[in-house]
Image (tube, rainbow, N blue to C red; front, side, top):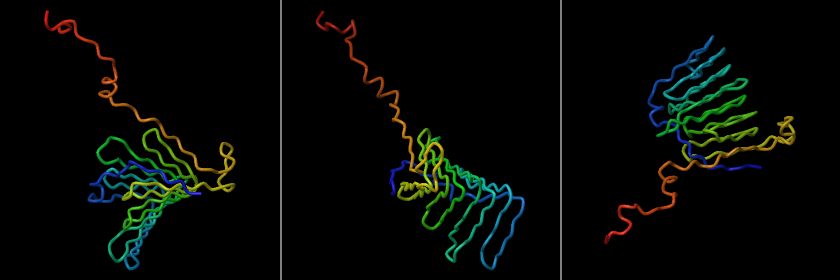
Length: 183
């Protein structure tokens, strides 16, 4: 079963123009195959994007697009949303990123948070272009004590009213100075 949840999340637009910074205990680079493998407490940043993992494998295709796979227990993904001070956080034992399609997939014990909203499943796919999620449960294989059937779980908080609209819902009362304009 697939649950499609509209997201209002969009990554910072300027992140893709920023340099990628990586730190790791070890790195193997194969320029001929255009593959780099970073291992051991890997930290990657690009603008507001931050990823922490045990291992990250990055491949570059002939068109220059990068594809990455991160492994961890869990991999931690965090990125600022465009135009807000809010961050998207994602977790999974494996995270795959496709730079060409701008999709991120979280596998096994997957969880994505945006503010106080959260969705959990065994698999989460986030399409940054369409701004949508697809979430799948894992059935009995993904069962936990709190979720014995391994179903998708979501927490969606009510929208907070802006202070301006909350003030406009107060009852109107006439001011004493203009109550009787003819007097």
